[in-house]
Length: 239
Image 1 (cartoon, rainbow, N blue to C red):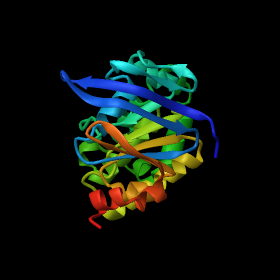
Image 2: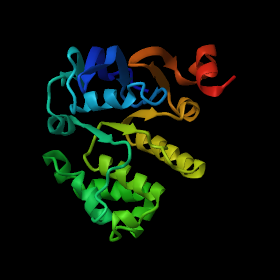
Image 3: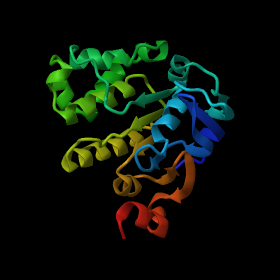
């Protein structure tokens, strides 16, 4: 695995709706990793992803991607640099087809040039989407909609994909399938930063992890080793 730091978040403070949501948060994601950001509901996980994506700008600190300072870039410029986000709740266009939803992900110039190549890769990861390409998104199951959301994120030709609450509302069997896809995505050279309330599964699937509580990073390290931390076991596993 590469030791190159692809994403570096350094000491950021973030305010959301007039209230402070993140305090002095720092993390690193190395190229080729699956990194989990785990914590309870309201801990600040989604706010951190929105900040990395440029939807919110930090009041303090910096964010670097592939050696470039992206702290003040607009969201569309950050997508063009190679970061895509799969939002919580999928946020598909329900009256558009699967293909149309996927194609929207390739709107930036670099991605447009590789649209057919990326579409082929998405269909390889999710064969059911090729079968359903002409179906309206609203007619799909929850798991299939999540596949479209991930596929749309991949259509922007990212180096880093941010996935927010992938397992929310889905059956354990579908969740296991989606985690297998994450490993396949990583095998294709795309780095993954995964936000999850399902702390147990995310720690068992990731290489490294950060635990965030009330807007602060409280633990970090090897994901499996964090499973054995007494603080984590008591807070999330009930043991």
